[in-house]
Amino acid sequence: MKHEKPTILVINDDGITAKGIQTLAYLMKELGEVVVVAPDSPQSAMGHAITIAKPLRLEEIDLYEGIRCFQCSGTPVDCVKLAVNKVLHKKPDLLVSGINHGSNSSINVIYSGTMSAAMEGAIEGIPSIGFSYCDFSASADFSPVQKYVLAIAKQVLKNGLPKGSLLNVNFPYVNSAEEINGIRVCRQAVAKWEEKFDERLDPHKRKYYWLTGEFTLNDHGEDTDEWALNNKYVSVVPVQFDFTAYHTIPVLNNWNFDHEL
Image 1 (cartoon, rainbow, N blue to C red):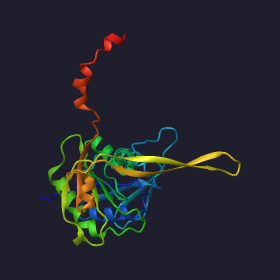
Image 2 (cartoon, helix red, strand yellow):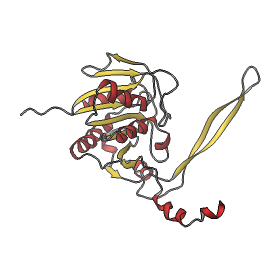
Image 3 (cartoon, helix red, strand yellow):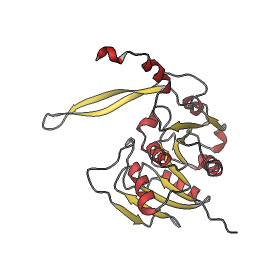
Image 4 (cartoon, helix red, strand yellow):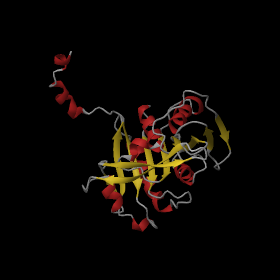
């Protein structure tokens, strides 16, 4: 009996021509039938944004050999929705997002278009993974992490993921695969961005601002994604889209709301 290859949907937020998604698409071709649906321009830090105030464009293009590719005018989450509803007309067996140019560890998962695409996949019940590499360069060399991408994707295809969860995978910056010490399953480190706004004047003397800031790590545990990356491990963090703070429910149940009415 002939077994059908799994269908693998490849998404990103750096744009369909980025080196990271090219690498990911060709790697996934080793595991199944690949379809790429990605933004036609960079959409970094878009989070879980969707397009509702203007029409979306979706165009099939000839970009990667042997792979169906579609570029979309919308956000990474738009790409997932269109891929499922208008391209595949079904849910794929696996959704992979990335490989992002730059880290999405710790608090960055909140802002990341890469991770939001994977999260949208998980919302749809699709086993989903977001891959990111700690190199922001457009010409980043992804060869040191390729075997880890394949290993993790194979395990998810084989075992699936618990309902409501997805994986946030980050790779440390290295010059060769031999520098990587292995894979660590971690928790998300406690960290935040300390934002600053560079205030300037345009030629008409009107103020405008450039967002700047510093990443502040307030967590020195050795079970975090930041520790893993700093020690040359691949970090694998299981995340979920249920934002309920369950530990806070008993606290709120002890409040006397009626007293304020």
